[in-house]
Image (cartoon, rainbow, N blue to C red; front, side, top):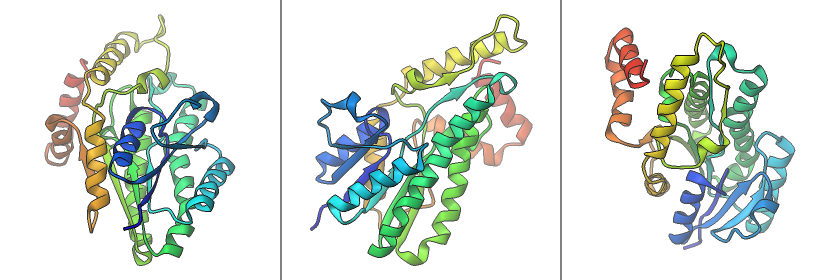
Length: 269
């Protein structure tokens, strides 16, 4: 049986690296992407391509390089993303635009780049890595939630648009996992004269603690393998602790104001 060819955006660290390493061990042919290949010259987990998802030309170059080498692409895992925190009022507009370019516009452009090849093959799987945070508005994380929520919705649309081409589309929403996302995250500074100073500082501390105490990214990788092996992938998947996954269920069944109180309590507010 021919090895499936996998492309993972943001594959040089964190969840992407965990997914790539695990799938490589399961005999898949894995390509990851990174914005700067020179920084990863000693990387040997799997092959890396240079791609900046904010740059459509960079995306097209990387996808063309992969297809020239392999003549096919079976699975796209849209994993590249950044974190962003801050009071909405105090978050610079340029940082908002950058978050959407990385977490939403970028993945969408990668999808556009791979669809022609998947249509030629009459087969393909697109897995969009979103977040459980994308199912709810969270204080001081509204931009991040919005970018991931947008990917959840676009996955639903794309799934219906491509169903006649033999292409499957799904989303996987992780909860908190122990990665280096905090180091690359933009967070608006805690300003001494800010009316949000006290509440934002509390929430930021809890966010960092949640990431540091998060689960093993290998759990996400194992979930990805199950999705790849599924004959008919579901519309949405979630992976994380029971409480994180159950929080999505609670949002559907509780009155809005009750759910809001739960979010505020969890955020220490």
